[in-house]
Image (cartoon, rainbow, N blue to C red; front, side, top):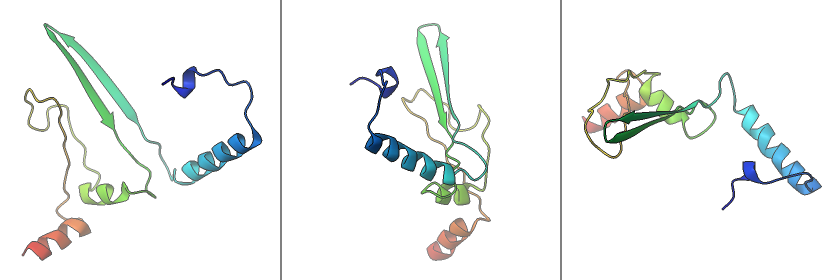
Length: 109
């Protein structure tokens, strides 16, 4: 499949333009104060290639809101987590004082 960015588009139909404008307006309405930063860090070492992909969804009006509430706005350093030779690595922070974590603790108790 050819990525849209590589397709020449000189003209679009009114329906295509309207659909895009509707999507764009809906997306921008969810941008309260930030955007979704995405970073990819590539590394080359002796007989090893590495990639570190970080996606930080910050649109509060979406399904990410619950993750934001649970994590309490935590930040990670590059040394955090269990660093081993896994194909993938996932880290999630829990704010013990957040309402969802307290509710889960009460339920478990």
